[in-house]
Amino acid sequence: MYAELLGDARLYDLLQRIDEDLARQVRAAGCLCGGPLHSARYRRKPRGGPAELGASYEHRLSFCCAAQGCRKRTTPPSVRFLGRKVYLGAVVVLVSALRQGPTPTRVSVLHELFGVGERTLRRWRQWWQQTFAEGAFWRAARGRILPVVAARELPRGLVERFTGAASDQVFHVLRFLAPITTTSCGLLGNGL
Ligand SMILES: [Zn+2]
Image (cartoon, helix red, strand yellow):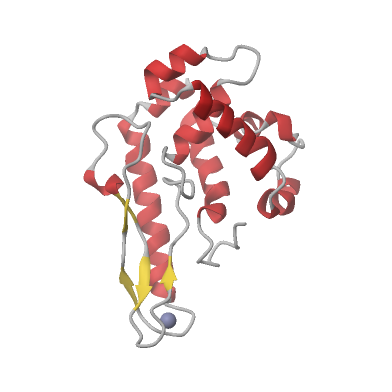
């Protein structure tokens, strides 16, 4: 079910619209100095999504303050890009989750479907269960998720705590995680 979802272009369209909405809110709020924000997108070449991902996925939305002497960068939270990870956020969450649970998807199948190899899967597991689990965001936010999700259940346990169809679950998880995708924007609480 999660594997199918990752191949569905509608998911990525929805996530694109959410990112644009988050960016609009950040831009409207302006720079901390009061200056106006101008577009200063980052070039990205995300992996793991369907082949027909639109050109919009070649950029991470970001802004620079236009005020002389400030020029501070503000990067809005994202539901598409999980920080600096090369793979799309949805892929890092769901492919990791597919390796967990009572019937984990085989590594060879995940490699064939998403181009994710064994080493990457191991790195992601380590990231979820150590870096993320011990980070400030999760320590502060995990109390909002019930029943409690143990570090070794991450990220599948987190996905499963959200109700609804698989697409709703991934949307809610990515929205929940959005604060950790930026360190230069306090709109949704600081990430790490
Ligand atoms: Zn400024």
